[in-house]
Length: 282
Image (cartoon, rainbow, N blue to C red; front, side, top):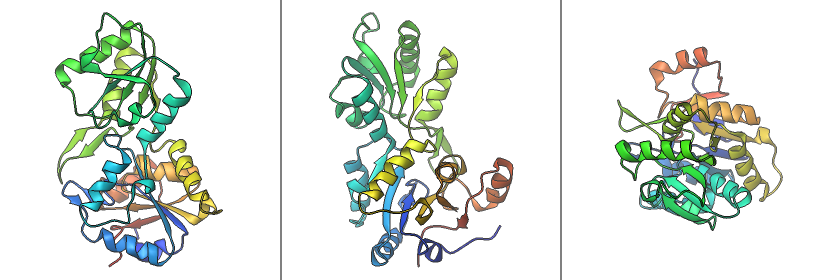
């Protein structure tokens, strides 16, 4: 398994799409030295966007995390969240009614922006579902697991409605050695229990990459082979980028640890264009 230096790799491209968690930040916060990477991109006129399956907060709130660490170059207009795709779906497909959500009040930003009436699962009257038209899985926090998940399951058994999953991640690392179930994994469980198919947004879905590609095209024409997708997870970042026709770089600073990388690539058949230790340029 031959690794490449990210600095040398990225200069071959006109634009780069970054995953967030495991690439730019980890359980300790923003990875030290990331600010130099973005200064390097700006100096070399390389466009950049953050593609994240994190629907727990708005782009403004996600950008603020970087700003608190002095990285002002990551602005909210450069962050593309799977929550934005869920909001777009609701705006075009759900014209009126009440949308129930599972998650925090902060994550509800995305469906509030759709202009629909919204209510948290915990506040739903299970005996009055007449106006409920959709359910959205947003975040794995903001509710009582032992109560609200059971309530959600029974709501979906009682009434047929659109169900949107705004984050396809099944787990996320909480520290160097442990992981926790993510909202995508929770949605998988509920889907299996009630025997229905949900609508999912986020990597590796092509819509996420198309949304980002259209953003790049607003600044001038660029071919797909001039864009690099950088991520730490084979089954979301890398396969998603590969399927969309982008070159991909797997970094070993997050979910895929160095000791397991070769085995995971071989067993999955998901082959990145490059493998790098991290996206640091110094």
